[in-house]
Image (cartoon, rainbow over all chains, first blue to last red; front, top):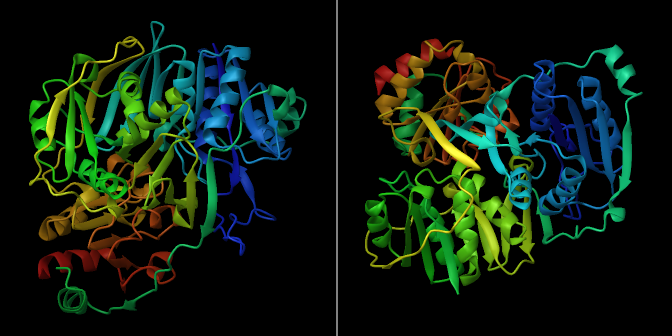
Amino acid sequence: MKILVPIKRVVDYNVKVRVKSDQTGVETANVKMSMNPFDEIAVEEAIRLQEAGTAEEIVIVSIGIKQCQETIRTALAMGADRGILVETEEEVQPLAVAKILKHLVEKESPQLVITGKQAIDDDNNQTGQLLAALLGWSQGTFASKLEFTDDRLKLTREVDGGLETVSLSLPSVVTTDLRLNEPRFVKLPNIMKAKKKQLDIIPMDSLGLDTTSRVKILKVEDPPQREAGIKVDSVEELIDKLKNEAKVI
Amino acid sequence: MGVLVVAEHDNEVLQESTLNAVTAGLEINAEVSVLVAGQNCGGVVDSVGKVAGVSKVLSCEHELYEHQLAESLAGLIASIASDYTHILAAATSQGKNVLPRVAGLLDVAPISDITDIQSADTFVRPIYAGNAIATVQSEDTIKIVTIRPTTFDAAAADGGSAEIVSIDPHDDKQDLSQFMGQELTQSDRPELTSARIVVSGGRGMGSSENFQIIEALADKLNAAVGASRAAVDAGYVPNDYQVGQTGKVVAPDLYVAVGISGAIQHLAGMKDSKVIVAINKDEEAPIFQVADYGMVADLFDVVPKLTESL
């Protein structure tokens, strides 16, 4: 089967973001950018399915500025076959992303779309579900295990109470949770090889889709800061503070 | 035209987070209806009917909805959506799974995990693991929103007397998804997201066995047990213990972080707690920057002593 893996370029998870002084967003200039960690898990899972003989071709898709090519190259260096960048300078929200992906799914006809359950920048956790709805496909969100059996996908999901297992028809949209796998490190020779892999660039405007933002960002602010408290030296002092000062026990 | 809240339940018990969603609904409009879709869930319908402030309960009993799978439930919700200005659910794993699918069916841009309601179309939500707070305005006719349960009080479970109406199931493709089973963590302790006290362990616990120290303290305090991602990834505890940006968000009266360094992703899930206690042997651990009471000490000495002294 063919697998489509949508990935997003985000501020690296180790960076502590700074809110811009004009409250329009967070500072992304001169900040380290990386592949969204959940998408990295999606790329890894696709490659493992290819190594196991389940998948034939892995196509990576990203939507955004031209620097997203670097993120796609990282996925190609991990082992994916080719990439597509839908290029735009605009901020593209999840519903528009899902519409673009639907367009590409109809063109590429994958049996499976795997992507991260959420991007660590806007923390929306929406794109996979929106895409599944637009396509009328099954959805396996927050996946921690995938097994293919008789034209269906047996999928284990991380839910609030523990784990849930569902059987999904194919084609399907899967979103990854943390315990699905541990992504591999990219080896240097593979980075060289990835430079030769096919990467098509499609201007977003050429698709003729409605990608306007429906959610207006009015402002972005710093969260209320929590002050560090005091250090206590003994268990007795801690219990005394909790009982008599904080009054929580 | 009012607000529709989607109830979360297991056909027997209503999830407490639905009560938080009702409160959010009432902040928008006094007319709040609650959808209870399930099978043999009459008890849940009755209990929702008693929730203070709920005007109407829509009950839809059918085998399609027994496990509330997103594919069938979203179709049902979308089919009745035009009667409402807002569709709300708690931002639980269930709400996060189902509501964006409803939005996709209706061509609406959903809004996730809001912490405040400024007006009928303007909401506040944390982004970047809570390191920035966005105020956003929806331009869609129907607003589809998940709410963060810890930031809205629970509606009173008693005192209401809602009208109960049965609605027909929505004819839907049933083969997309089938429920096969679940492994739920069994525990007599309070539920993590609504517990008054939470005791969490991190990588510093060192092993699954050592987590018993955390459990003993939690039992003494009648607290829920949580964990950092590092402790879950290491296999010390199951996934549903995880507190953080991509796990559960908690805001108890007292949060005790034991052997947790305090990565921003963990802080995102607990920094709204009223009182934070941190026990860590590394004086430089970032958890101390948010802790009201910090104790630089070996957790294996201090935690058992604490349990004993309480």
